[in-house]
Amino acid sequence: LAKAIHQGDTLQGEAAMLDLTMAVLGAGPWRLPEGRALAGGLAPRKLRLIADYAEAHLDGPIRLRDLAALADLSEFHLQRSFRASCGVSPHRWVLHRRIIRARALIAAGMPLAQIAAACGFDSQSHLTRGFRAATGATPGQYRAALAPLSPTRLS
Image 1: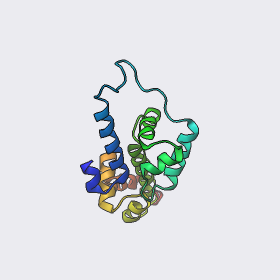
Image 2: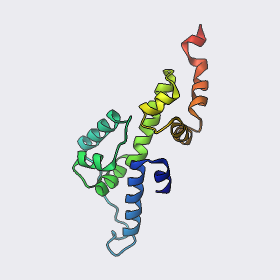
Image 3: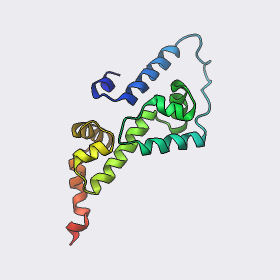
Image 4: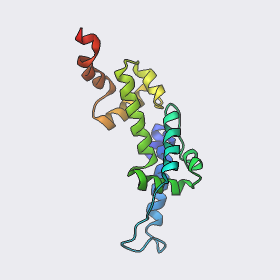
């Protein structure tokens, strides 16, 4: 939660709050009996709706409440159902999609500051931190690794 606040990442902050709530509530007498797991996930139609919305809005903030409204679910239920369907939180999934877009834009030769804005990162340094955490390389290192493969280098 502190990391999300420091980075100004609303979706990660909302996800952290819900995870904290689930952890606290999971310890009480209202939790599921041992051996029983929550079943289900999102309906394929709702998952596609959320995915399409996220892809169309990767360049800006994506809030958990907006995704929940699309699926007509509470934020808590969306978080849990999305994780059951995809194996990751909505925040982690959106971050992954942003990194995929950033990799494509780096390969296309776009300047890093423009890539950061096009992928919903607050700054080039925010892009660099997220990219390094996801790939193990900075965007500049990734671009340099692609350079031998570019058509201009082959001529």
